[in-house]
Image (cartoon, rainbow, N blue to C red; front, side):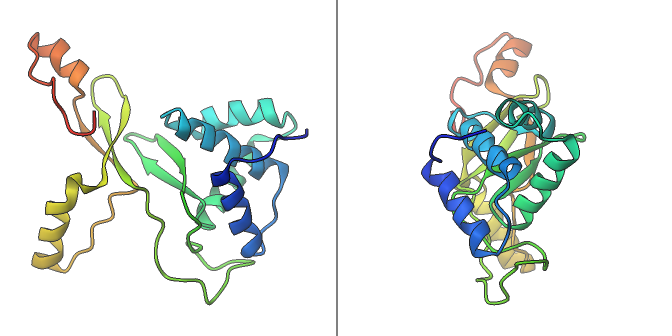
Length: 184
């Protein structure tokens, strides 16, 4: 299937794959396009949801191919995954190419050691399951305290913090206690 020209973020991810010596397959391209579109629509898609959309772009993509693509794109540093509770994982396209997460074919030994920056953290409502983006600096004080007290470097990019969203808090309590919340 022929695709329209990629967005700048997809083009950067494809360039990163080529830079690492990785193959750019129709399935990988479709995964990147689907995840990028979801990111732009403020959606947080699971592998199953990505698979359903990839099938529309590349009908011959097998489920196993999809999972291999998600894994390899994550290892290449162009996709990130966020654990949102239970067994659910959602995916984001990384805004810039990062280094591979593990040694493997096509990995550059001289790649920089910095990690991809997501630009936000995630929160997940325990009542309705909605996943939202919150400002990256929302955990800055906790990260600073952990670093100074324990020498521990916090990486909140792969988990969603559990809690209750404003809608569910208002619905449960009948009050408007949650009218102003960070990141809304």
